Picture 1 (cartoon, rainbow, N blue to C red):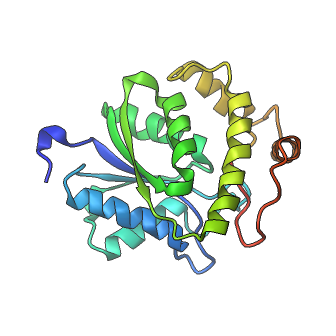
Picture 2: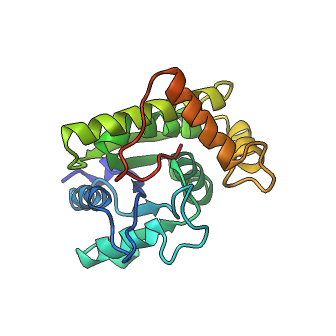
Length: 228
């Protein structure tokens, strides 16, 4: 077990699909299992579960991704006192932004271990570096998705087009530039802004255009729609 001096301030688990019965998709449950392993190993004394619902999900879900993950974790022995919820985020950018704004900054926390799946790891690391910047110490732990090779290929194609979109969108934003990131979230983002300069439909069209230009073909029908 790590010493207290080696601990992060928190483990952060990124949300994902919640099924109609309120249970977690298997690949999301794998994220929570990996976070529980990190908690037991002494990586941090608290776990932040982040996520409301996906960009294309209902604005008022019956249970948020964060709450569903927390319930799963509690059933497996995670103390309620070690759990914090972030229930605004509807994409990876939101995960990083709202965790920073609502939890890390108010508590003065600077060191986190982020847990997500293998297929999502590279993009999540890029987004967190863009939002948090050099003032924060963050590392990642990968949870196995359990996907087949063909399924991982489909996921990789989706990740590619979303990364291209985000790189265009955030090209002028320096890592850790809070003012620029705040402006994007408040005025530009189609989900979080009151009067966004780009609608969700326009974002969808741009993602499709990126896929077409780069010959990134469509998504398997069983997968949820990709979100930035």
